[in-house]
Image 1 (cartoon, helix red, strand yellow):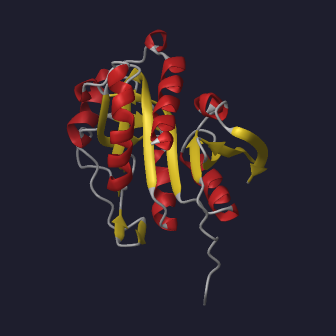
Image 2 (spheres, rainbow, N blue to C red):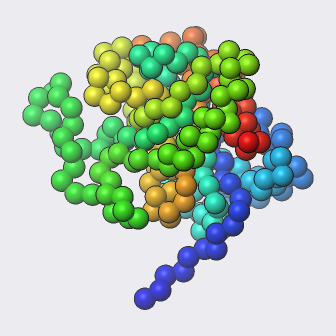
Length: 250
Protein backbone atom coordinates (compact mmCIF):
# COMPACT_ATOMS: atom_id res chain seq x y z
CA UNK A 1 0.00 0.00 0.00
CA UNK A 2 1.49 3.33 -1.07
CA UNK A 3 1.24 6.13 1.46
CA UNK A 4 0.95 9.76 0.39
CA UNK A 5 4.22 11.67 0.68
CA UNK A 6 4.06 15.49 0.51
CA UNK A 7 6.12 16.95 -2.34
CA UNK A 8 9.53 18.23 -1.19
CA UNK A 9 9.84 21.98 -1.67
CA UNK A 10 12.95 24.15 -1.41
CA UNK A 11 11.83 26.18 1.59
CA UNK A 12 13.19 26.07 5.14
CA UNK A 13 10.95 25.70 8.17
CA UNK A 14 12.31 27.78 11.06
CA UNK A 15 10.56 26.78 14.28
CA UNK A 16 10.58 28.24 17.77
CA UNK A 17 8.43 27.87 20.86
CA UNK A 18 7.27 31.50 21.15
CA UNK A 19 6.83 34.47 18.81
CA UNK A 20 9.56 36.59 20.44
CA UNK A 21 12.16 33.98 19.51
CA UNK A 22 11.32 34.51 15.84
CA UNK A 23 10.43 38.22 15.77
CA UNK A 24 13.86 39.44 14.59
CA UNK A 25 13.76 36.93 11.72
CA UNK A 26 10.14 37.75 10.87
CA UNK A 27 11.23 41.40 10.53
CA UNK A 28 13.64 40.25 7.77
CA UNK A 29 11.05 38.35 5.75
CA UNK A 30 10.39 39.93 2.36
CA UNK A 31 6.66 40.27 1.55
CA UNK A 32 5.53 38.16 4.52
CA UNK A 33 2.29 36.22 4.35
CA UNK A 34 0.74 35.29 7.70
CA UNK A 35 -1.45 32.20 7.88
CA UNK A 36 -2.23 29.23 10.11
CA UNK A 37 -1.30 25.59 9.68
CA UNK A 38 -2.66 23.06 12.15
CA UNK A 39 -3.91 25.95 14.26
CA UNK A 40 -0.37 27.40 14.51
CA UNK A 41 0.82 30.78 13.24
CA UNK A 42 3.20 30.59 10.29
CA UNK A 43 4.88 33.43 8.37
CA UNK A 44 5.92 32.66 4.79
CA UNK A 45 8.19 34.63 2.49
CA UNK A 46 11.87 35.01 1.63
CA UNK A 47 14.98 35.92 3.63
CA UNK A 48 17.98 36.86 1.50
CA UNK A 49 16.20 35.26 -1.44
CA UNK A 50 15.67 31.93 0.36
CA UNK A 51 12.07 30.72 0.77
CA UNK A 52 11.23 30.31 4.45
CA UNK A 53 8.26 29.46 6.69
CA UNK A 54 8.59 30.68 10.28
CA UNK A 55 6.53 28.56 12.64
CA UNK A 56 5.53 29.35 16.24
CA UNK A 57 5.03 25.89 17.73
CA UNK A 58 4.29 26.58 21.38
CA UNK A 59 6.61 25.25 24.11
CA UNK A 60 7.40 21.62 24.84
CA UNK A 61 7.50 18.32 23.01
CA UNK A 62 3.81 17.81 22.28
CA UNK A 63 3.29 21.30 20.84
CA UNK A 64 6.44 20.99 18.74
CA UNK A 65 5.51 17.59 17.32
CA UNK A 66 1.94 18.68 16.49
CA UNK A 67 2.98 21.96 14.86
CA UNK A 68 5.81 20.50 12.80
CA UNK A 69 3.71 17.55 11.64
CA UNK A 70 1.03 19.93 10.38
CA UNK A 71 3.60 22.17 8.63
CA UNK A 72 5.45 19.25 7.01
CA UNK A 73 2.27 17.58 5.78
CA UNK A 74 1.09 20.92 4.39
CA UNK A 75 4.32 21.61 2.49
CA UNK A 76 7.39 19.43 2.90
CA UNK A 77 10.56 21.52 3.49
CA UNK A 78 14.16 20.86 2.44
CA UNK A 79 15.43 21.71 5.94
CA UNK A 80 14.05 22.25 9.45
CA UNK A 81 15.77 24.69 11.83
CA UNK A 82 14.84 24.75 15.52
CA UNK A 83 15.90 27.95 17.25
CA UNK A 84 15.33 30.16 20.28
CA UNK A 85 16.77 30.39 23.76
CA UNK A 86 18.20 27.67 26.00
CA UNK A 87 19.98 27.12 29.27
CA UNK A 88 23.75 26.67 28.98
CA UNK A 89 25.84 24.32 31.11
CA UNK A 90 28.75 26.16 32.72
CA UNK A 91 31.09 23.23 31.98
CA UNK A 92 30.59 23.81 28.24
CA UNK A 93 32.28 27.21 28.43
CA UNK A 94 29.20 28.99 27.07
CA UNK A 95 28.06 32.26 28.60
CA UNK A 96 24.74 34.08 28.38
CA UNK A 97 24.29 35.29 24.80
CA UNK A 98 26.63 32.65 23.33
CA UNK A 99 25.53 30.29 20.55
CA UNK A 100 25.24 26.51 20.53
CA UNK A 101 24.71 24.24 17.52
CA UNK A 102 23.40 20.76 18.32
CA UNK A 103 25.21 17.65 17.11
CA UNK A 104 22.83 15.36 19.01
CA UNK A 105 19.54 15.69 20.86
CA UNK A 106 19.05 13.57 23.99
CA UNK A 107 15.68 13.15 25.69
CA UNK A 108 16.78 12.74 29.29
CA UNK A 109 13.35 11.64 30.56
CA UNK A 110 13.25 8.46 28.45
CA UNK A 111 14.50 5.22 29.99
CA UNK A 112 13.87 2.80 32.83
CA UNK A 113 13.96 3.83 36.46
CA UNK A 114 17.37 2.97 37.94
CA UNK A 115 17.88 0.61 40.87
CA UNK A 116 19.15 3.49 42.98
CA UNK A 117 17.58 6.92 43.28
CA UNK A 118 20.85 8.58 42.27
CA UNK A 119 21.70 6.34 39.33
CA UNK A 120 21.21 7.25 35.65
CA UNK A 121 18.19 5.92 33.79
CA UNK A 122 18.66 2.57 32.12
CA UNK A 123 18.10 2.33 28.38
CA UNK A 124 14.61 1.62 27.06
CA UNK A 125 14.12 -2.04 26.06
CA UNK A 126 12.50 -0.99 22.76
CA UNK A 127 13.01 1.59 20.04
CA UNK A 128 10.95 4.76 19.76
CA UNK A 129 11.80 5.17 16.10
CA UNK A 130 13.33 2.83 13.57
CA UNK A 131 13.47 4.74 10.34
CA UNK A 132 15.99 5.62 7.62
CA UNK A 133 18.79 3.56 9.26
CA UNK A 134 18.16 5.24 12.63
CA UNK A 135 17.35 3.05 15.64
CA UNK A 136 16.42 5.55 18.36
CA UNK A 137 15.67 5.08 22.04
CA UNK A 138 16.47 8.51 23.45
CA UNK A 139 19.41 9.84 21.43
CA UNK A 140 18.88 11.58 18.10
CA UNK A 141 22.01 11.99 15.98
CA UNK A 142 21.62 15.18 13.97
CA UNK A 143 22.69 16.08 10.46
CA UNK A 144 26.47 16.63 10.71
CA UNK A 145 26.75 18.33 7.33
CA UNK A 146 24.17 20.98 8.23
CA UNK A 147 25.78 21.54 11.66
CA UNK A 148 29.23 21.96 10.10
CA UNK A 149 27.90 24.35 7.45
CA UNK A 150 26.13 26.38 10.12
CA UNK A 151 29.25 26.55 12.28
CA UNK A 152 31.32 27.86 9.36
CA UNK A 153 28.64 30.38 8.32
CA UNK A 154 28.11 31.73 11.84
CA UNK A 155 31.72 31.68 13.03
CA UNK A 156 32.82 35.02 11.51
CA UNK A 157 29.82 36.95 12.84
CA UNK A 158 30.40 35.50 16.30
CA UNK A 159 34.12 36.30 16.22
CA UNK A 160 33.44 39.89 15.10
CA UNK A 161 31.03 40.38 18.02
CA UNK A 162 33.05 38.37 20.57
CA UNK A 163 30.25 35.80 20.93
CA UNK A 164 31.08 32.26 21.97
CA UNK A 165 30.13 29.48 19.54
CA UNK A 166 30.32 25.72 20.00
CA UNK A 167 28.88 22.50 18.58
CA UNK A 168 27.80 19.77 20.97
CA UNK A 169 25.00 17.63 22.41
CA UNK A 170 21.78 19.26 23.61
CA UNK A 171 19.37 17.71 26.09
CA UNK A 172 15.59 17.97 26.00
CA UNK A 173 13.80 18.20 29.34
CA UNK A 174 10.16 18.40 30.35
CA UNK A 175 11.08 19.54 33.87
CA UNK A 176 13.31 22.63 33.83
CA UNK A 177 16.47 22.14 35.86
CA UNK A 178 16.42 24.39 38.93
CA UNK A 179 19.26 23.16 41.17
CA UNK A 180 23.03 22.96 40.83
CA UNK A 181 22.89 19.33 41.97
CA UNK A 182 20.59 18.35 39.10
CA UNK A 183 22.68 20.33 36.60
CA UNK A 184 25.86 18.57 37.72
CA UNK A 185 24.18 15.16 37.46
CA UNK A 186 22.94 15.88 33.93
CA UNK A 187 26.32 17.13 32.80
CA UNK A 188 28.11 14.13 34.29
CA UNK A 189 25.81 11.72 32.45
CA UNK A 190 25.33 13.42 29.07
CA UNK A 191 28.05 16.12 28.68
CA UNK A 192 25.55 18.53 27.07
CA UNK A 193 26.20 22.15 26.21
CA UNK A 194 22.55 23.25 26.32
CA UNK A 195 19.15 22.37 27.79
CA UNK A 196 15.78 23.17 26.20
CA UNK A 197 12.28 21.70 25.91
CA UNK A 198 11.61 21.08 22.20
CA UNK A 199 14.68 19.67 20.45
CA UNK A 200 14.12 15.93 20.62
CA UNK A 201 10.53 16.36 19.39
CA UNK A 202 11.71 18.29 16.33
CA UNK A 203 14.56 15.83 15.74
CA UNK A 204 12.15 12.89 15.94
CA UNK A 205 9.88 14.42 13.28
CA UNK A 206 12.82 15.30 11.02
CA UNK A 207 14.18 11.74 11.13
CA UNK A 208 10.72 10.24 10.64
CA UNK A 209 10.18 12.35 7.51
CA UNK A 210 13.83 12.05 6.42
CA UNK A 211 14.37 15.83 6.39
CA UNK A 212 17.71 17.40 7.42
CA UNK A 213 17.46 19.08 10.83
CA UNK A 214 19.53 21.83 12.42
CA UNK A 215 19.22 23.32 15.91
CA UNK A 216 20.76 26.70 16.70
CA UNK A 217 20.13 28.33 20.07
CA UNK A 218 21.48 31.12 22.23
CA UNK A 219 21.94 30.93 25.99
CA UNK A 220 19.47 32.98 28.01
CA UNK A 221 20.58 31.56 31.37
CA UNK A 222 22.91 29.08 32.99
CA UNK A 223 21.53 25.65 33.90
CA UNK A 224 21.37 25.16 37.67
CA UNK A 225 20.00 27.14 40.59
CA UNK A 226 17.03 29.10 39.32
CA UNK A 227 17.69 32.85 39.25
CA UNK A 228 15.39 34.64 36.76
CA UNK A 229 17.02 37.95 37.67
CA UNK A 230 20.22 36.77 35.96
CA UNK A 231 18.53 35.72 32.72
CA UNK A 232 18.72 37.70 29.49
CA UNK A 233 15.95 36.45 27.25
CA UNK A 234 16.02 39.46 24.93
CA UNK A 235 19.73 38.97 24.21
CA UNK A 236 19.25 35.26 23.58
CA UNK A 237 16.37 35.90 21.17
CA UNK A 238 18.46 38.48 19.29
CA UNK A 239 21.60 36.34 19.11
CA UNK A 240 19.78 33.15 18.04
CA UNK A 241 18.05 35.06 15.24
CA UNK A 242 21.39 36.59 14.23
CA UNK A 243 22.94 33.13 14.00
CA UNK A 244 20.09 31.68 11.94
CA UNK A 245 20.23 34.69 9.60
CA UNK A 246 24.00 34.23 9.17
CA UNK A 247 23.42 30.60 8.20
CA UNK A 248 20.69 31.47 5.67
CA UNK A 249 22.79 34.27 4.22
CA UNK A 250 25.64 31.77 3.86
